[in-house]
Image (cartoon, rainbow, N blue to C red; front, side, top):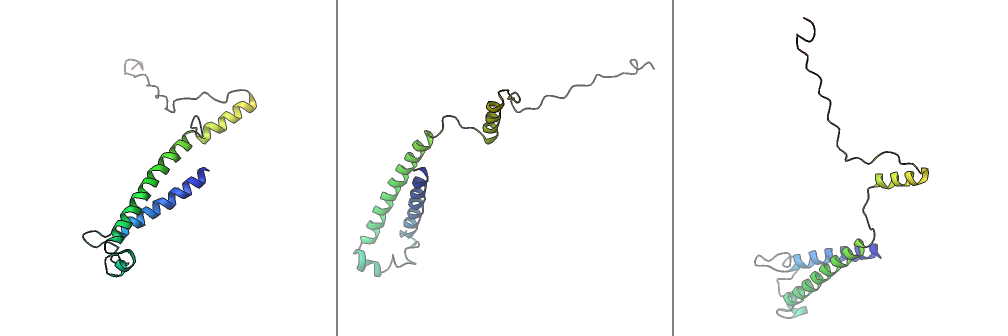
Length: 126
């Protein structure tokens, strides 16, 4: 189901991008390149039909985009209770299999290097 939702989400994203680019702006946009700004579109959609059709399609795709975004986030949230890295998962499997812990889980920071004792000429016997 998750894969199907992602596929539909990608289709909506690409469609929304195309519809936004097809809309004519003050500069003409890409709609002029495909006949959106000329008289040919008027024969199909009417005088302002192309603009209202594209704006309604944009609104519908934007609502679908938002709805799918929320739906995917809710579906993904319930898929795992605690995110883990692959290394932690493998360590957990080995710990369960052997019954003994492999190594303590540290903070990932290195221990500070020891500070060497200062030597003076008086300490060396000179």
